[in-house]
Structure formats: C-alpha cells, structure tokens
Amino acid sequence: MSTVIEPPVEQAPKNLEELEAVTIRFAGDSGDGMQLTGTQFTNTSAVLGNDISTLPDFPAEIRAPAGSLPGVSGFQLNFSSQDIRTPGDQPNVLVAMNPAALKVNLSDLEDGGTLIINSDEFTKENLKKAAYETNPLEDGSLKGYRVHKLPITTLNMRALKDQVQMSRKEMDRSKNFFALGVLYWLYDRPMDATLHWIRTKFAKKPEIAKANEIVLKTGYNFADTTEVFTTHYTVKKAAIAPGKYRKITGNEATAIGFIAASELSGRPLFYGSYPITPASDILHELSRHKNFGVKTFQAEDEIAAVCAAIGASFAGHIGLTGTSGPGVALKQEAIGLAVMAELPLVIINVQRGGPSTGLPTKTEQADLFQAVWGRNGECPAIVIAPSTPGDCFHMAVEAVRLAFKYMTPVFYLSDGYLANGAEPWRVPQIEDLPEIKVEFVSDPENFMPYGRDEETLARPYALPGTPGLEHRIGGIEKQHLTGNVNYDPENHHFMVKLRQEKIDRAANDIPPVEIFGEQTGKVLVLGWGSTYGSITSAVEKLQREGKSVSSAHLRHLNPFPKNLGEVLSGFETVIVPEMNLGQLSTMIRARYLVDAVAFSKVKGRPFQIREIVQKVEEYL
Image (cartoon, rainbow, N blue to C red):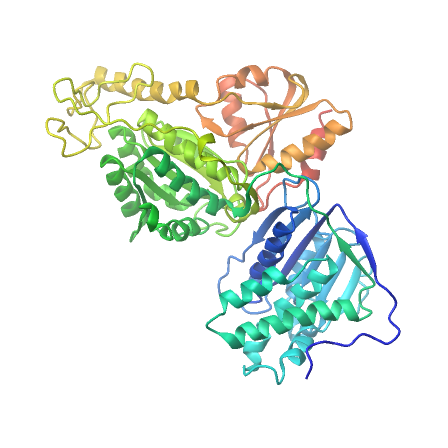
C-alpha cells in the first residue's frame, strides 16, 4: 500500500507561526528509541542554525519491564532563535509513547502545553503497569493541555505492511521515527539530515533503512495532510558569532580536549579507565583516536586503571584516568601516591547521584569534598570544573596545563548533566589555545629529585631511564631535596606544608573570577560546574527587571581565584545554588567567613531558572 496518506479534498490551508524558542521532551520505554529520536531532532536543529541545549534522561533500570515507571527514558531539548544556556525549565511539548511515559513526565509539562500521545499503548495492561486507575485519555484529567491522540503503533504498521520483509516486532521498533516525522512537520524541520543518517547507519541493513525512511516520511505526511494539526511553527536561525560550529556533548568535548592537550604539550596521552556510568563515553571516544597516538586501557578495576595512569605519568606521558564518584573512592589511595610522588596525574570525575551506586544515570555535584579533602592525611590536589558541555574542552586543556606546570594531580569535575547534554560548540583556532610546556631535566650533576622551582615549587621531571637521574619512588614520606625515605617529624611537617603551598601557588596562574553584572550590590549568586546556565539565565532575567543581582562562576575550586574574597565582600548576600547539601557554601564560609546561603537541590535533576529566581527574590 502507499506510504503517503492523501489529503482531504477540501483541506483548509494550515497556519505557520514563528516562535522564539521551543522545549520538547520525548519520553517512552528505554527500548523506544527516545535518545535517538531526540538526538536526530537536535542534529537537524543544529544544522538549521538554532541555538540548542539538551538533557537526556536515562533510566537506571537497564532491564526494567516494558511499560513500567522505572523503565521510562526521556530526552529534552530546547532550540531557539536566541542565545540559550539551559534545556528549558518546562517542556512546551511532551511526546509520550506509553502511559508510563505520561505518568512520569506530565507534571513537568507547562500549563496548556502540547501532548502528543501514542494512544495505541493505552491498553488496560499498560495502564495498570503505570499505576493508572482510569484511562487519562478518557477521564478528563488532561483537559488543561492541548492533546493529540495518535494511533502511532497502528499507523506505523500500516505504513510498513507489504513494504518490508520484517517481523511485527522489528517493524514496531520504527515507530519512534513516525513520531519524529510528525514533530519535523510541526516545527518546520527538514528530513534531509535524518534520511542521510538512516542511509549511512543502515547501509548494510537495507530493510531497516527502508523501514525507517518510510515511517519518517509517513509521520511527516500524516501531520501535513490530516486535520489533526491546523498550525505548525518555525524557529529561525540564531544570531551567533561567526565561526565553525559543531554539536558536541560534554563527554565528547572532554575527550577532544585531552587529545588537544596532548598535541599542545607534545606528550602522548594514556587513558586508564574502568567502564562506569556516566563516564564510559569518554573511553569510547578516546579509543577512536589512535591516529593521534592515544592509548586507551580498559582495566579490570578502578585501582588498576589509576595505577596504570600513574605509571604513564611517571614515564612522561599525560597520565589520565576517568570514572564517576564511587570509582573515585576506589582510586583515592593511589591518588595519594601520585600526590606523594608529585606526578602530573589527571583524574576525571563525571559526578552522579550517590552515595554508593545511588542514582547512576542522574546528575549531582556532591563530590567536591571528595576531590578537595577525600584522601587520608594532608593530601592536596588542584580541583577544576567545566561549566558547559563546550567548556569541557577548554577545562580539559587547563587540567593538563596545571598538572604539568605544578607536578601534581588535578581533579576534573564534570557531571552527568554536562556529560550527556549537548550544545553548539565553536571550534577554536589552534593559535588561541594555551601553550603547555613540559620540560624534562637531563643534568645529573645538579639533579635533586625533590628540588623545587622557585616560582611554582614543582619538583623536576626526570624521565625513567635517563642516566644519572635514578631516584626513589613510592608512597612513604620523602626527604626534602633527596627524596630518600624519611621519618623525621620536622621533615614531615615541612614537606606537608610545602606540598600545600605548591597547590596554593597555582592561584597565581589562574584567571580572576569575573562578575556578571554590577561589581557590588544586594545579592551575588555564586556557582560552580553545571549550574552556570541556570544561574546566569536567572540573574539575567532579574537584571532586566532592574534588580540588584549579580553572579560569579567558579571553574577553579582548589585553589580559589585570588580575587574571590574581594568579590564576595561587595555584596550583602551570597547565595550558592548546588546539587548537593552545601559543599561549596561550606568552603566559602570557612575560608572567607562569609555567611553564604546554601541553596541545595539533590533530586538528580539540574536547577531550573525559575527556582533560582524565586530563591533570589527571597533576599531582595
């Protein structure tokens, strides 16, 4: 049968309206292809020149029963003709592929928002799985929304019947592309980029390629030619700075950033890792770039991964290891060894909800204390944090620069929101990237393993195997200068203070914190990591209303920027939004004796703009 549904003879012309921004959430079973659907919509919007921001939401239960609440997978994206920094507070549109997806996500949909529902899945059995006592499509509970009940499963099967040689189960897997086709028409998106992706992805599986192509076009034509939708919308290209752009996730930017650091420093990159959500994609991405001399090692456990990376650092490579919070706990003893041996190790922590296994697919910022103080003894390390998916690239380069310059471990604190979220990223010019100098000593006559650079206090970097530069390595306290094993109390006290002073001196080498807004005023909103987008957008909104509010964002957390105390002193109230119970605010209170207000959210979800606006208004 034909895959195109013919329009009615007397069809009224459909309206086309222009919108500034739209937030869509796709939701369904983990096997419904919601991540793929959202990614394709995102890629198409990026090609059209919209500014974009995304928030994938993965279920923690890998094998949750189909149709159950724990198995719901979601993908939210915000696309706009203006500059945006977040994936949107509330979806304007919710695509719900089954009752469970509706149940989990409906409370987030804006009042009067658009609901596109696969009505075929609202069976008695599926309603029971989603804990519905009555059918929401029939009981009036959705009357506050614009509801479009589409028999997507049936329409998908009709389109593919007699067209492809596939089982019913295989054909059913294409229904997400029917929904995608509907959304492409509804928001004036071309299908070309997705059709090209289908043909490339399934080049060796022509029946699957054919099925997805048919269904995508059928969904588009259905929306165009039936009377279900009377209006569709367009979002124009955003005005952005000229340059070459690509869509990038935080994990992709992290991997590319460390590869760039390898090229800038002239040192090979070694990545030792044990797979763990949500850091695993960094291993996957780095393993694809052997052409840049990248060596990846999937270890048998976290301890083996970090120890291998320490060995690479000792040998003059960029020693890099990556994990998420529980994995860092296992690495901490070995990280202490790197602190004692004073080696340039970099530790990626893509933070997730904890403690223990916690919420492995949800975001959190609760590992700041772990990075700054989470080892035995006085064991200081530099701690930095990117603020956006694109900033992950630049902070990866910064981590390597500081690690080599100060001969110390550096923690790189990303999180699940940054790791999986995407945005347009302006590809930097090579000449705009910082220089990374790595100098190895070669003179055996004047070599002292724990001699110090006068400016940085970094010890000399001696490649193993260099004649005359043999020295002891290990975790027992070192004697000043010689590096010999030493138990003298005065020497231990001296070396502990020396290692701390080395980290403190890194403050001379990091940029001052910048203020967004007036330099003094009533309220300063201070953030770090992935809260940047929500904080800046909220403060910008309040500033437009004439409120005395500014913001500052920290990318260097240990040591703090040298001017931070001065910045804090210029405001009556300092509010610190964090996805933890107040870790940065505790550090600020202890260091600067400022009565910082902790604004905590530990729900596995990032802050919304309106939440921060409401909190700030309490103090105005």
